[in-house]
Length: 467
Image (tube, rainbow, N blue to C red):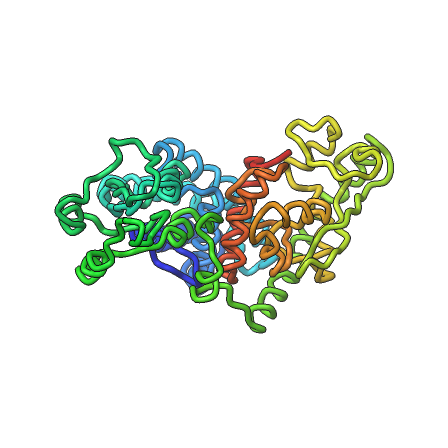
């Protein structure tokens, strides 16, 4: 499946076209809702206000759909599963967002009957459009045919990619590169006898991924440089394994990472403009969240006090930008003696130290809301790697290569790793989260921040990655 790279982030092109078509259909449905079921005079029903409402409505509903992951669900799940997500995104999430906008921007108000009509019409039209899209567009035909050069440890890591929600490619086979140890089963291997171009033509290969453990020819390794160049000149894409992981999974595989690639490759860019826009983004979103979430924060204060008394807030030292420590604030979700002796302890699944109110706050992320003040102070950003405790950071720096690179950007209230991996509570978990944190450090942009913000709604609503 073809990709379009926007601000360093890969987006699958068929879904860009689907989203653009749906935006148009949503705007039409909204305008019909105003003209057919709206209240007010003719200027409201047919004039500029109706058009402005239609565009805002289409954008809100599109973001709600993206937030609940219904585009990817159409491929990974059944049509029924995707339809359920659409119902929730339009009837609950999107409708609630529109009602809030009605109060914040009174000029957009067009009446509950018109909004109800727009939502129902949108749901019917979009589901029909999605069904038509999946009937006309064979997803399997959009997948790229990938040939992997290598059959050792690096190639095995590529083989695992298709089990990790990768939907854009099919691996036609692996070519062993002696003298590396072959770890893949025989049925997945291809014979390179007759040349690389023969396999490319036979399997209609679109891309060759280089995943060879040993490239030195002095040891008899098979690395057909001239044949690869010939394939590239004929339009076949040649890709390093680390770039393949980055594009398909939104992660940077640690086993493939080396300083040369980081220095000479794209990404890892920093600028004053990016710092200013990110800071303005942080302040704006934090103030908006504070305005909307203060009733939940009041509930947390009262509920925590009634269950376990004081203290209500929990202060803990975390590692911030460039390794500088700072104090993070959370609503206390554990018992007062959660860490006897002051020793740092990883949180566990079904942790007995978590109170009943604390469990609810963790599931809904209410316990994290006091970190809004950390963001306003500048200790944290709204989007970024989650800050860890210095005790764990010292241990992880010794165990995991490049772990300290995640501290080159401000830690965040929410992050790319939280979207893609469950709660980290061990060194192994920290290693799997690091591949996503490094992706963010390399490719962070305002677009990626907005994407993370929108998709975090699904994490909160479905309670993903909670302990």
